[in-house]
Image (cartoon, rainbow, N blue to C red; front, side):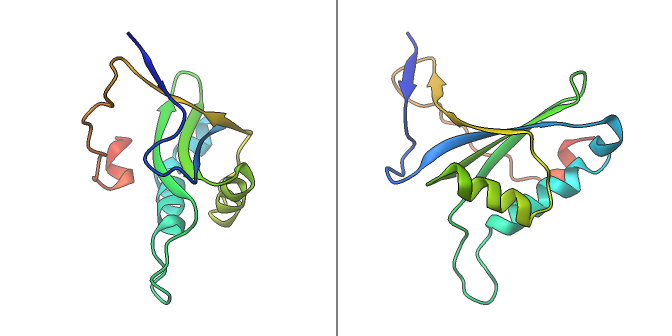
Length: 120
């Protein structure tokens, strides 16, 4: 049985998938680009307020030269603005729905290792 979840725990936001088609040379800088995204979403040192966009995770498909990034935000425009701020070009943003194999979401903890260590 597959359960479709329209929204995660935050009822005021939606999930968005960003698609990026990268030339092989851009993949060399992918860890730095992902780190910029995460930094832009972190609470501001001055204000202590986090971005309205939450960066969840990325998946890189090296054989396809493609990177997918998942975000939680109120609008696709907010996701686009965050990616512009991080100077990380994108090709498309689409609304996303998470699917789980059971009625309960998986108990998966996000990978907290530095982004650059995940690509080696």
